[in-house]
Image 1 (tube, rainbow, N blue to C red):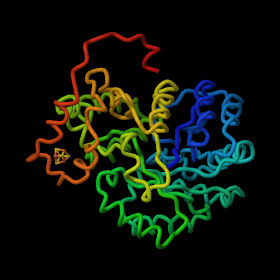
Image 2 (image 1 turned 60 degrees about the vertical axis):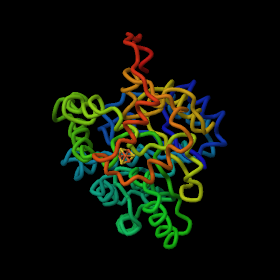
Image 3 (image 1 turned 120 degrees about the horizontal axis):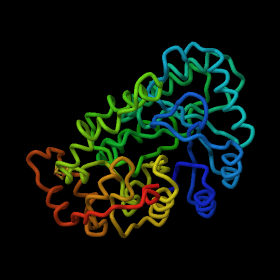
Image 4 (image 1 turned 180 degrees about the horizontal axis):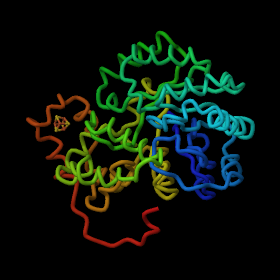
Length: 354
Ligand code: SF4
């Protein structure tokens, strides 16, 4: 099973990826100029020539561009200049690095791009992002029909909702249904997001990030998560992390035959983090603090050390087969007590956060 990994224009990280090319299926990245069109808060401007140069090391690996914001500033949907400039930028990437497609979470944006009649449309796959939460075959069919109507190419892969990672019956049913209708469709699962299972904050969090990226309001998403959202939940109930639908490197084999590729997340956490995570998932083993592999819950690593090896070989089997009625079950709490310990308080140099 190959990996789909974030790409950031860092020469050391690009070298690591080049060494692991045989393990990679695709890379994905955001546009580093123009209005924010991807699902993360802000990104720092990047020298376009460095971007093309570093990505150029990865010939043969499919590149995808993230246009996966939940929504964009409303006037931009009808702004022909903005839409054609965006497509011109994508065209340059198509010509220089062989851009394969875009990843989206907002069908309005796909329709808006389609309406320009730009010649690039029919050359790019439109891949529904994980935040489209595709968790049944019928949902996938409706999405694919919607894409077909826009003139974009149908995606070569579907990224299924993370909730299916801990629901093998649902995963098997969904994959079987999709493959019966679309035998060549690739199936991708997200490994290391680390968000709450069926996160009740999810849709609002996505919307808050998009609102922040419009520039119309001040960025406060971290503060809100910390005081009212999942960060607060995890600080008060850290054992809930174990019920989050992550896939450990050791457990990838359980998805063989169901998924074709595993997606790694964490593109805003810097090259050191991404190098470590890519190494763990290519080796399919990690001897260390499991939280250090996580994207959304990585912040907990400063407070807790979860010894990944202590979770044991039955971890996935136990968590995938429970009834998810956590209120009456103490298994995750017991496992957490067994495998986790509190970290001593230390002050890290700022660069170690990168
Ligand atoms: S039901 Fe038990 S084992 Fe399953 S996620 Fe909840 S606490 Fe964990």
